[in-house]
Length: 119
Image 1 (cartoon, helix red, strand yellow):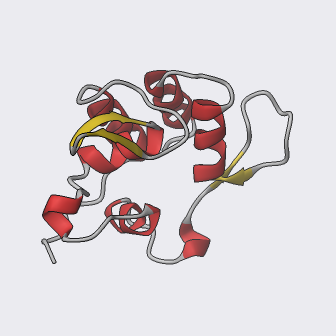
Image 2: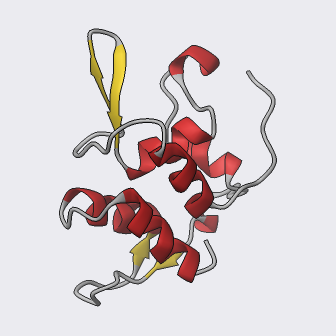
């Protein structure tokens, strides 16, 4: 298994990963003939953190991303409010996937929101 990089902020990983591929919806990553075509907000962060099948030998998940972010237990994963206040606060991944897939926010706008929360 590759050596773990130093702990980083999720907003920074999203910004960095958003520069690598167009935005996708409904899946962390979408592929076309074996070539990575797009990434959602979580997929962008994973790409920036070098969490790829070719590096790890398996398909990385949000649990692998948690390690990069310094969240050792599932209880360490932050609970944050939805920006519109429509729903009760929830785990960070639920909120950002909702903003990406259901609200159509850009990954950069989601990163701005997370940065405003210190994440």
